[in-house]
Image 1: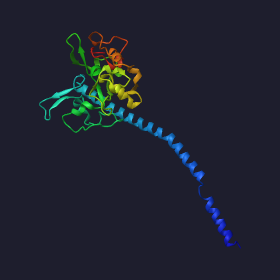
Image 2: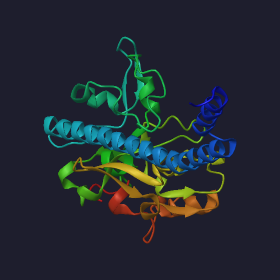
Image 3: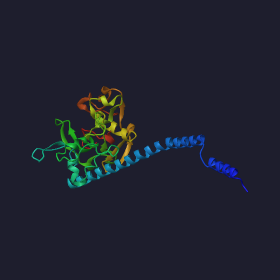
Image 4: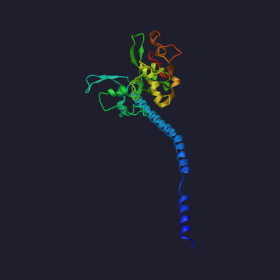
Length: 278
């Protein structure tokens, strides 16, 4: 017969063997911390990739809306700005979305999913369209200017343009002073970026696409002239400079008629502001 003392001692040993020692607990905590350190960046990358995919979906829908507009307006690309002083409320110099709204019917689409809808879109004066983060390529897709006719602007015929499957029609942009916002349009000058303290650059046209790419691992998220959407490495379509003066030279500011001679801007991607087909 087992004595009560022996039974109690055996019971105490069982209790001791069923718990964690301090060392074991610390080891478990360390393993969990290591796994978290490994997995959290993976989760962050997966989340960023999902945002980029959502942005590509938005770009595809914007591009498709633009294609439907072309079908309704004899292949003429929509303007980049709209005004109507007699409207109620009055509409003054608002962005391209005004033209595509009948085909989109969704004001959330013209925003980069990585940043979300960054301002109220409720107002029907459409002033918010000047801050959208999916912008239209004003110079290379929408219109061109005749340098022999006092820089008269004409709107482009889509099918007359060269290499439209490689031509940026819409792209993600960002502001120097308010990164969550974008612009109503982007220009070919954005091909010449200042990488040193870009938030202090006074000419924001040089920065719009470059800063937008920062939200997508330095990729310019783009809807092309044929409406397909994709990302292109910033370094493939943007030239980098450390001074504003050099960037402005790249953009053609010091060239006759502001036309930048080759080699310079990637005209297949950006188009040119002075030629109806390129």
